[in-house]
Length: 74
Image 1 (cartoon, helix red, strand yellow):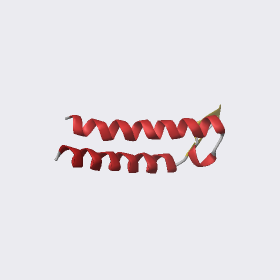
Image 2 (cartoon, helix red, strand yellow; image 1 turned 90 degrees about the horizontal axis):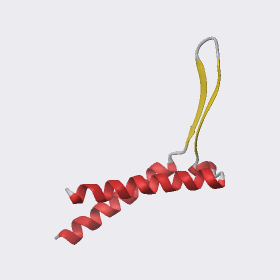
Image 3 (spheres, helix red, strand yellow; image 1 turned 90 degrees about the vertical axis):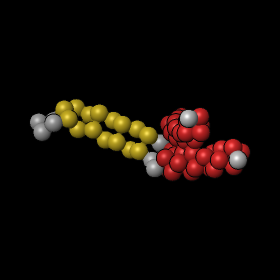
Image 4 (cartoon, helix red, strand yellow; image 1 turned 120 degrees about the horizontal axis):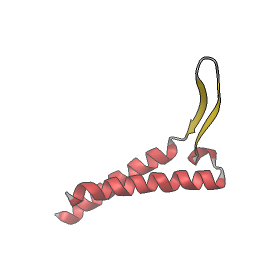
């Protein structure tokens, strides 16, 4: 059970850290922003700007950590 949680947690922490860095330093490649504007007649208008790079790096980190756990458990 421990082998599943370590890569998952490392992946999520990496993604959160990269999104946090992107929002703090205003880097568009690492930024996550959601802007809610005034309600319109047709409904609520919002804008979402979500970078994919932190997601991809997080998945890569999770994959690498999973391989390291498998190698060390042998």
